Length: 568
Image 1 (cartoon, rainbow, N blue to C red):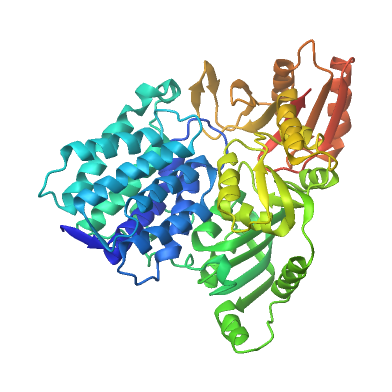
Image 2 (tube, rainbow, N blue to C red):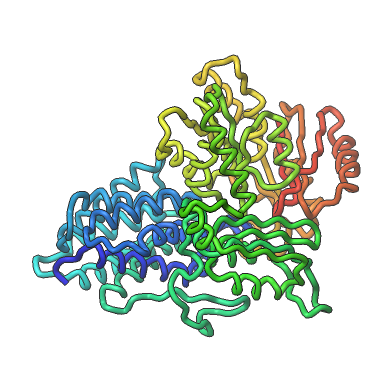
């Protein structure tokens, strides 16, 4: 091929997104830190899927329009730092071919140079040995190797070859990668995307492989690409609104062990508008999907249904367009609230915080937070999640507390893309829950936005944060041997203090590391795997060990992290 149009580019993008979907668990395995975080592969996959949904059913031949739509989908669906950088790469690509109906190979090369430039500008302190290095080195090498008669097929082969070379070089640029023995996960994800694009150029379009629980790619059956993922949340429902309550079983009932993150990942791969709440052995699920049967069959592996509700949203949409009254009561309530909010005057200030856990949610609400965005370590919220929250607050000045280093970029991107001239969003770059809480305490409705922001940002350094969670693999980092399923004591810069079999020993280790002669208060927020009965024991033990410090122990109800610790 010497030129390509919008439909050609669409196939390249979809094939790249499909290839990433098929391999994102392998990308997750490359993550350096052995923590059950919102992983790079999953974040990039959800970001690319959002872009793919934007162009899946478009028939434009104008290549600029397809690139622009894909970029918009990526921007709104971006999750985690890796997802945001991926969205910026393809935003730059779109900028590079703006206004063109079709492009030559040389113009595609120029677009990848634009992709590199935009991605680097989006990161305040670019780090080499990452996805940024891979796009920079591969695009620069492509410029050097391209010839007048080079075809698109050959050009994409060259891009992939150079991206892989760059990826192999990442451990030489980031010592931590070499220590752990892996390449950069974000760079690996970009290589997988390029691989899917190159295959499509050669007429070998990559289909999305749907895996059942326990299957690997070797035994998977090919399925239609984007089955169950074609719905846009903005469309208020094409497909089926599926809701159910599941009582979890066990081996004696013939049921599989329930792992919440794996369950959530399956839902994300087959639908959207997902709400998953677990309360002991009860799991409540809401999801929009084109394949409700797939959802129910999968869920029944883990328990038995107490209730099931399925509504055809496509039919609902058709009925509403023809003047019928909507039957989705929850949807009607939300729409009514939204309409009422539009009529109300904008208040001066609004506060948004990211939280995961009923106890944490209540803490933030008590501090005046207007909207809680669900997410955190195990599932990073998207740019679109923050845009919706900004709209919902209905305020002139809105402060966002991401409370996680991997969420700051998505929150910042939302402040840039929100289509509302009445609302100005600012991100207070809190990287931990305890930083967010401490910063929020400095907010005053009587101060100007500038003074508030300065005070809250300054307060971030007043607290030292730590956490306790379990390790997901064996490895060695910074001289500490990590054993799978042991508990790691980690400081807020992700330095690992210890890895021990007992979570309470891990708690003591991290507090010992954080406390110094200037400390005056210790806050411990315990998670789902710690019972409320243990609260007094933890507090008594700490008061005995640190008699001169104030001790505050609270139930956060957060998943995955046994303890979140703050020392002031």
